[in-house]
Amino acid sequence: MVPNDANGRLPPGERPLRVLVIAGSDRRQYNCPGVDGKARALALRMERRLPQDLEIDLEDLGNLYGRARIQSCNACASTSMALCVWPCNCYEKGDKAEPDLMWDLDLYARLDLADAWAIIGPINWYGPTSNLKLMFDRLVCASGGNPREDLINHKDPEKAMALERSMEWEALSRNHLEGRTAAFFCYGDEGGDELDATGRPKKLRRKAWFDPAEEPFADERDAYRSLVWQCRYSGIEVPDRLWAHATTGKGKPYSEDQAEHMVEDAPFMAAFDAWVDAVALHVRTKGAMSPGQYRAFGYEAPGHRLADLQLKWREARMQAGFPPPGSSPAHQQERGLNEDTGWNTKASEGDKRRR
Image (cartoon, rainbow, N blue to C red; front, side):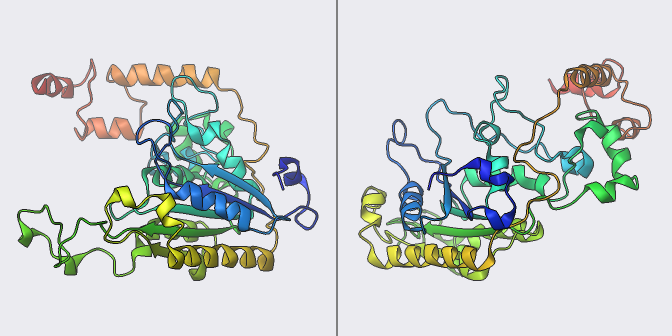
């Protein structure tokens, strides 16, 4: 069934269950590296294998040439949780200056629409891919983010700090995607043919610096533990049986460990199919999720031209060495904690010396 976004406005009992399938590999087919990742092949297989009365929404995060990337999180929450807006307002759809794939693909709305997310990706250097890490970093706003940017004049740090300390904040801050299910299938090759008989990299000259007994994970699925724990922290259910890992291509050179080789690895494909079936069973058993009060689906970002001009004025004054009185930057300037360039700061002299 082709996903029908209009169903997102129906009550949970009247709409089809919906699964968002995400292929999280960074690889792209048509230019460098010139070969699609395994995650895409697995996601397409999952789309075909899931019961077809479900609404299945599929997205491949692979970096097509010239396509916008998922922009990095600016860590607004570390200034004030009220500065971290749900859905993220550090970027916006169609932004020419800072194009952002999260907004251009409407991922906030699609994550909101789905009852469950099925995330498939390789292990890259003991962790998830950069695409998935960026996506989940940008989902910090789902866990307690501010749904009322009008209360902070779009992005005013001082207003956000004041809001976070107010009685009003408790009613606004909540887990906006709570109740959904996330499932993870990560895969690896355990070093391909790079390891010697002792479990050390063959090309390593200083063998004593690498102890295979100190490898980070006894269970390879733990490479995705940070994403799983972020979900659980945010009220998104990740049942243990839906957090899976399998290995393919062990001991082979990478040129012999592509998607066409993977699909001939019967034990690996059986493990993946079992995971897909477990996802389907869980979704059916759990049923549809009720939407949160503040939805990303159907969200229309308010205009902020005047707010941008006001923030530019704040920025210009800070560059001149005049941060807002009583603000965190003012306190930091008074204590000499940050040596920012400014026309009116002693720190600017230190900055000049470093140049």
